[in-house]
Image (cartoon, rainbow, N blue to C red; front, top):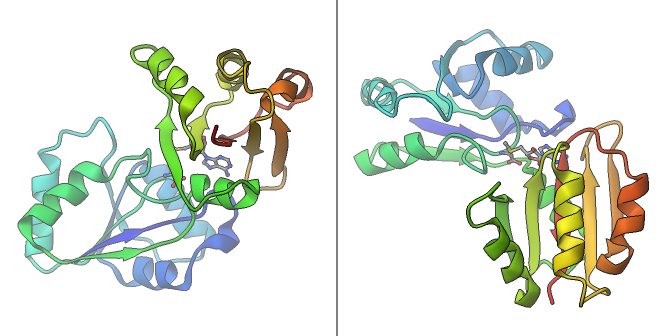
Length: 223
Ligand code: SAM
């Protein structure tokens, strides 16, 4: 059995009972960074486990070794450093390969930064578009321009190094729609959690005083 286990995005208290139970009883944990997952087990007072590194740069053939173990009835978990595996994180390659074998998979849902930001945003979220991280170069301008006519709420991840530049690009591209709402969610579930709700027209003034440390999710209201 492969268990896909979500872990907290900053607040240990957000671990679920099922995640604790599953991480405790499994044979080994496939993880993005063994140090991060080792530390999570330690902080949660969970038993030490064999940690198998499987990140974005891992040779996909390593998945075959993991699949062999699943075929031998081992119970493995997959986690990422934080949040839900395969959401802008490693996991997809392994999960799709295991799916193709027909071996059992269960999912232990839990935190994900974009869902937390959407629900905190106060914007309509019956429908939304999740963009992950925006492309750095190729396709970036096309994607940003496509937001001009997007009617659904848009959510994406951004790093602290690029947040100012990205917000300034958004302010320029959406300048003709100054009333469109935009929400900048920072350090969700952590001590310095901050959710700034503003509009495209006011965005420049907000970014000038905004703290640019930590982790960010940006939510933009639809046209
Ligand atoms: N798999 C994760 C999930 O389910 O949310 C996302 C992993 S992605 C590599 C990491 C990005 O998520 C960060 O760069 C940031 O944009 C966002 N993020 C993660 N934790 C966050 C938090 N506590 N507050 C705001 N954004 C966060």
